Length: 350
Ligand SMILES: Nc1ncnc2c1ncn2[C@@H]1O[C@H](COP(=O)(O)OP(=O)(O)OP(=O)(O)O)[C@@H](O)[C@H]1O
Ligand SMILES: [Mg+2]
Figure 1: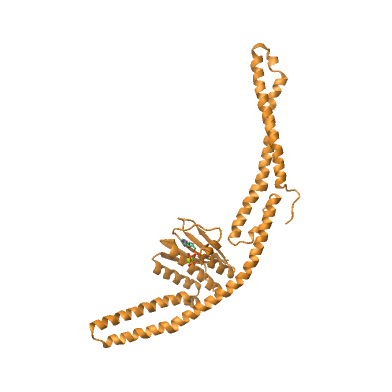
Figure 2: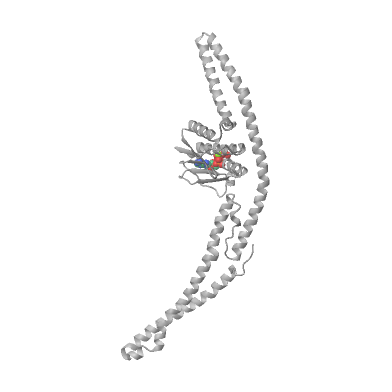
């Protein structure tokens, strides 16, 4: 970054300050002293001296003394203006950039904030650190991409096996129980068989739900909007929280990888609503415009956002971090807004 010769460094600012301070003090003392002298002289002279003597020009001079205060005041004003423009504002801008950096925004730290040389050096240091972190993250991202793809592949395989093997066997079992029930007359045996049939039926239903979560078939067959609508209904059914669904604009089909990522983010965010929010209602919105915006919000208890989502990972919570990774893999940006008592909003824009 280019260093401007016009800039004052912190040390010159300090020197200016130490120069102005004693001058200001001396001037203030002179003004106070001259005012006291003036008052004393007036008191002594007024009773016995003529008006001309009492208004001696030398005494009048002391009346002008307060004007001298204007000089240190002007200097103090200039120092205040300089401090605000060259130190406080740049530091505030840098603080905002550092917060954005903690949330994974590597671009904003490169915008110049101005200010004294030391602040510019600090920004340069942060930008350099951000560049290194970004480079190492890019390496990690390829790895995460490979893991996510493998994970989706594994989920698909599991869903297929559950559907083609386990669920089919359970259906066969249920039919056999039904045959047995038709041929048995003993009341005790019939009750046991009926319970077996109900157990098989419930297990089939649970496994179907698990299969749908593992492999969102609505997504593949009917597209993102229908899949998101089904997802909101399923979560509403499982939690008792009213989950609204809203689609704004004309749906357009996206790359299957993008659709799957958006679906997984919505799924994870709604699972968080179900597990942590204690909300009465939630709303899932997808908007198709120049950008595609997916938003999941609830009116629940909210939570204190840490300085960075990675702080959650060190405490063993990976959901929000995983959502952000998924978003970044498809070139989207994930934002989380929450505060205790104010609900939670997760937004992804691509
Ligand atoms: N909608 C929400 N309402 C209230 N708190 C939430 C919400 N979403 C997340 N949180 C808080 O943020 C924390 C981190 O969420 P995250 O999804 O990263 O982890 P987790 O749900 O605890 O575990 P997992 O790794 O299984 O997802 C949660 O433990 C919870 O305290
Ligand atoms: Mg979670």
